[in-house]
Length: 163
Image (cartoon, rainbow, N blue to C red; front, side, top):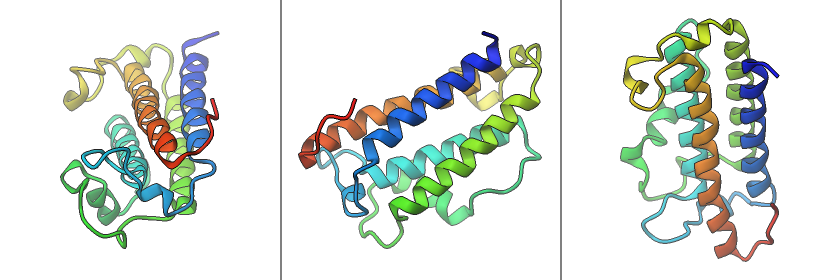
């Protein structure tokens, strides 16, 4: 197994866990919070989409614009507790964006040689992703971290254990 295969496996596993946890969520369920001070699932999904896009855009600036600025701003940490629901997407919309961004991430990954994966990562990420390869591990790890938060929301909603 080479570095690309390992990174694809990480990204695929993280996505499997995340989507398994929201598979039976309704649009209303996406707005549930595990506790009052926690982010709801809709914000977390948008945050993951925006973060992944920002990370791959940082290492491959020429990728196409996939997200509008309004979407990115709504899912910024500063807006995590914005009241109202009209600004958040539906589950179907989040799943579509997760797919588009991940497809682009995989294309970007394949555009780098194994040697290039060892080159320095973007300056703003170097404290936790010192290389281009570690940017991809950060994407998968970030998704798994949020999946853990979604598991707690599942429990609060009384949904069955899925993994």
